[in-house]
Length: 472
Image (cartoon, rainbow, N blue to C red; front, top):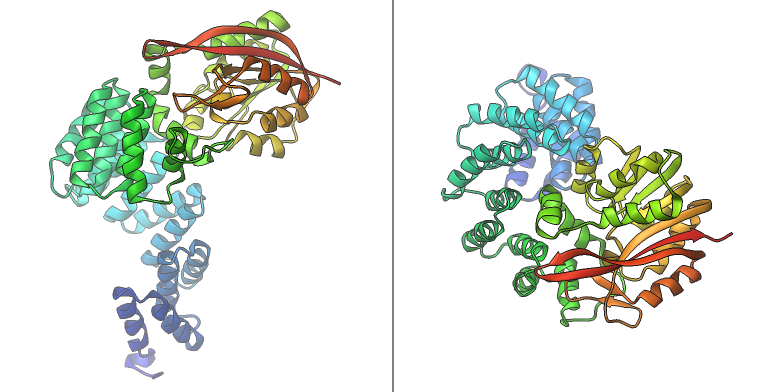
């Protein structure tokens, strides 16, 4: 390797070879070449930046962050290193630091459309929807009509409540041959948010016609049909998803509930997390207006019947909090309310109510096993249908209750000996099994009632509402 060149600079031919390997997709070879280069020239910012970029492409975000940091120690204004550093921090989940670095990069290079686009994506992920709209508009002013950034703008407008403009942007985009598949997804979701479920279905089908080999399009169609109780339509979409993505556990689970495989006692976490993430934006409208849902009201009535009027003294945990309907219903009894839910988008919706002390996107069992807090009351409205075997959850709830604490929940009833999968892709329970389970897990029954909690089509869905007291 030559060590001399113009004005004493090292010969960069080895780096050019590594860049050629990268361009040809030979990333491992490129890494080996840059490593050799850095052995001889450990402080060279171009070599460090190239190694950072290769690490990011190989999915090694921590390595990319470290090499980008070393580059910036030697050249604080190295624009590529700033871009890589921001991308690495974003991949590692540190959105605040990534946003700060994009601001620094845009201060040096305000005409960088990629930085504006990524800053918009961070704003979207942190519920700063108007900021996201502004960022995507900035990016499009630099590269007009860019299909993915236009798609992002449509999504941001929808989240910002500007549904008419969002719909217009996305409708125009999906007419273009260069439209990304995500444009159909976003247009379908916004159409559903506006209450037009048949229209949302039609948009997703149009996306499938354009992108017939995309498993995610079928998955989103299946989720949409699941929310409107189109069992046969959802099943066919899940079959097509599984055909294109044989490892998809969500599709395999749902089909198993329909006799196409063995149904597990508990569902995979990704099924309900994915379904309710999809459902989050139109969750309350659909539950209340279309299904006549009142699970939160049933919980409130049960709590009031056994505990009396609320006096704002209790530490309460809302399991499967969704958008916060139940947390709001029991607020009169609460000194503080914590909540958790599988679906991150549900948690984001719940935060907007401003009533929770703590919110986490995780499974109920994970939360209950990790928490050091002890609660006076745990509530779970319309949760048992999505967990299968209730015994692990009930034991975990019992372990986090204070002496004299209570657990109030609803459970859908069905013609089963203990519990099993019902026809609406929810677990159902025999009422006697629920009281037996309460005794097995350290509770005594304070009250139990039956009521209609929702309708699926014209069918009333009956539930048992139980309020349990923790036994000493």
